[in-house]
Image (cartoon, rainbow, N blue to C red; front, side, top):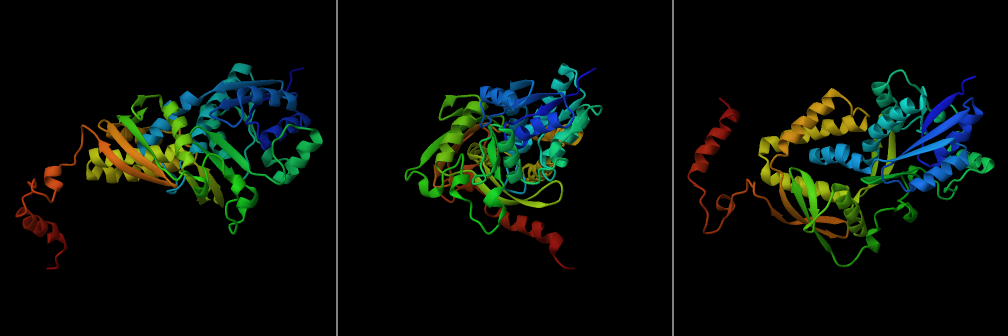
Amino acid sequence: MNKKKIILAYSGGLDTTCAIPWLKDNGYDEVICFSANLGSEFSPEDLERRGIQTGASKVIVKDLREELARDYLIPGLKANLIYENKYLLATAYGRPLIAKYLVECAHAEGVNTVGHGCSAKGNDQVRLDVTVKMLDPALKIVAPLRYWELSSRESEIEYAEKKKLPIKLSKEKIYSIDKNIWGIAVECGALEDLGNATPEDSYVMCRRIEDTPDEPDYVSIEFLKGVPVALNGKKMSFLEITENLNEIAGKHGIGRTDMIEDRIVGIKSREIYEAPAGWTLIHAHKDLESIVLDRETLAFKEIVALKYSQILYQGLWYTRLRESLAAFVEKTQEKVTGIVTVKLFKGNLIVTSRQTPYSMYKMNLATYGDGDEYIRENAEAFIDLYAMPFLEK
């Protein structure tokens, strides 16, 4: 008789830890875990140990940080993707990549069912399910949180304690945390009450402003066609630059967002996000673009970024529209090359200098000094023509 198997997307957190024994208690003979290392709070060794200890027959861990950076974060940075003006989409970037490898693992293991520990009211269930369906519609998808009797995180903790499962949460500190190299998401617990200020124990990558240094740091970021290639004059990979900036900018309290967010399923939720490197890089990248791109391209690129961000947030990365928007963005980056220096201080990002060989800024036209070559007499004729369509007959 064939064993009933499932490939479970496993993070090591509360939900997926509880999902392993629950699946085994509900008809699955074998649970194979797949974990994507995207910069998680858990090490690969820890994930494997915890998965086996919880009842998995096998734990597959893949280091996908470089792929995440190359194929998802860099295109997103070039587009300046920000959802609802506040969220840099760290979790959303990882989901299409996880789904891609979840499908690959199912094929490699000869399993026709995949599962995940996403909430029934969250975004990630949509992102993973839709992507799996696009990549292999024949796969069955099981999401325990949509069916099980555990109605709250408190009840999950009780279940875990009863089953003697390895968890790192308590009812006193019950946050749900998702972390990768681009940022971190913190929710649940005291954060659900809009009347509560963010508790001190909810800070992870960013320091509170009260705890930041009294002296600033300056970072110089070099871009080549929209891609960061050096930090403070030292050549580095995108991943290395991101890791360094997460530490430096996080130390200065940069990159923390407390927002009321519109989820895919239609409800509003309070989310806390931290992305020190992401905000620093986007701030510098947009500043460099303002020098090398013309007014109309900059304006249209903002419209593209709005739609592109929604596509990513809604789990539609592997679509023709996303690929088409990415092609437009790529064209705009041909001259986004140069160095931007940013001052980091008390939660603030302040650009202090810019250098680029493709600058559209002409000091001889912009100056009010003796070097001014602007032909002032032309202004009157320009204004007459500019106003003409708005004059009443």
